[in-house]
Image (spheres, helix red, strand yellow):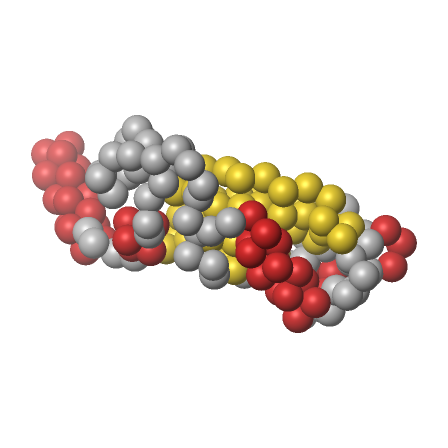
Length: 154
């Protein structure tokens, strides 16, 4: 029986690893739990991260902060947020994946903006938006998902 386990378990592990090799795994770049008890996690596919334009931390990033804020504001409004909401914080963050900045490795840092808006809905609520350097907005995955604006509130 021990020999069986010693042979079968590693074999199954190897087959599992081979089966998932090259998969497009979602990589979590940001997450939080809102005051409403909803967990939001922002995922980016690993293949998208590998193909993304890098930034060597010199000069301006490929997407200017003003453009990122405009894109984020449009997203907030599209989710039912107030047109009178305003930017509370802008963070320029990276998901460090093990390679130094400026590296051509697919594991170089992955940069994005995390923009938080205030007065999005009633009672002074806020909403966070993640914008990638290619100008795309990442939709958070909500748990539980209600299909209402509360899914996106902080």
